[in-house]
Length: 336
Image (tube, rainbow, N blue to C red; front, side):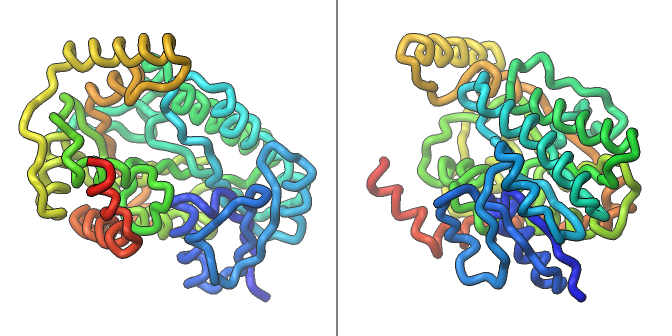
């Protein structure tokens, strides 16, 4: 009999890739989607649909019933505005609800999808890993703080012996099926010439398919209660923007943005948001993150979860090709 896996967040960027990875390995896939939500990246796939919400406990109990494992990838990844109670509700309360549903359903494995930003970051020479203490509190970002809180809830459940969980924490993902788009928006902004410069910091980049492979591997591999950073290449924003622009055949941003100037811009965006009661293009929390170098090592996941290390060039190409094939780039003429 096939192993049945419940996947939350299946309609998202990572979720679309996880669904395909699970199907490729002949898992029986059950997806939890919100009521009346369109899921173009899942259309036509041989999956079992359950309507529900991570804030609706009864719908979770129904969805988990009969499942052998759960991959909890649903999250509210909104970072603008920086403070948003909905983010806390989905990311923390929703995770607590999933933990309880999985416990009652006696699932054999629970894989929680977090973010690398719940750990401390390092330099390119000495990147951060799973042992580095949380350093994101200073940003004032509900997304980062809520994901740290959700991580704590999963680890506490493992320690109580009530949840056989493994935690995976992707860095910045690129690749196909980014329908919203999420991280791929950065490629579109560069392609459209809207990025005037590059901030002082940097981050770790990874192919979304590699994240999907390691996350599905976590159903059978890895140590219970352990966290695994899923990443690949550490690049400054200057290096990343140059590489992405080169792969897309456009000019990269030429000017460095001094951290102080970037902070002033963030303050201005905050003032605009307060005055108009709608988010500015950025905010101070986003600027503070961009001014830092969020560099990580994924050696633990490579060793224990078989995390692939596909060249980032391939991730960029696949993302750009997917956007091209689905007519995202034609918006350039209308928006410029």
